[in-house]
Length: 292
Image (tube, rainbow, N blue to C red; front, side, top):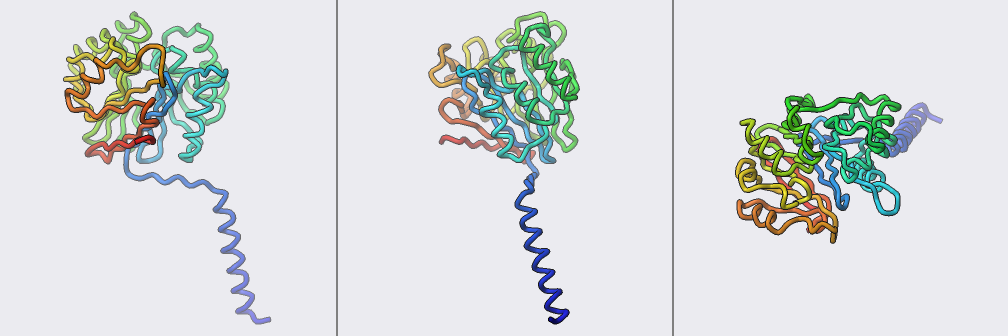
């Protein structure tokens, strides 16, 4: 048996063994873009933000399901796994309504989460208290987010909290929603939670630039949100409405969808288009849906 034959045999063994090892390793590829996926969680909200360097933020987690399960476990978690995500840098809960925060406990339980932030309202409500307890038990840092806070991804992406302020927090849960502007290069996306006309007006009065290519439409497209003045300030290219099929509230309002289209926005609805993915290279956004 020659020495050359032994070397070749050993080399082949190492290559084959390496291939078997690599098959068990999940590799995440990070193209130089910002990716925001608005998931179809029925009559609720959940969006996953992935930065160019692979940082992950979840804004709202979907709600509770009629079968006793949660959209966090049934929809958000499988999506994260499909993306190769095992760690979440931050979960932001816009306001303490079950259709926005009902899936949080399941996500905190299943993924490593560094930080949890909300608007600080109703800390004693059982659902909120359960989320905070779960976060504490898993070592996630809790933060009450307010106007002026910035979550810096360290790769050119920043999520800036525009509302609520101290005054806004005295209003209803919807009108104290976290309103977050995600910026990357020359592009931005405005996330509005369930903000209604009152919080929109408060934000307009701050003098902040609201112009954004992507708008997550407030309160599932309810007629109590998305005023003409607010839309003129944002002037989105893409508008995403997170809404349930044949929901009991009649969302979205035709008045709102007509208003959006009148300014030239492409309107996407999760009940009709499924998940909506918006990608930015820092110069412009492009959008795609799971259901054409």
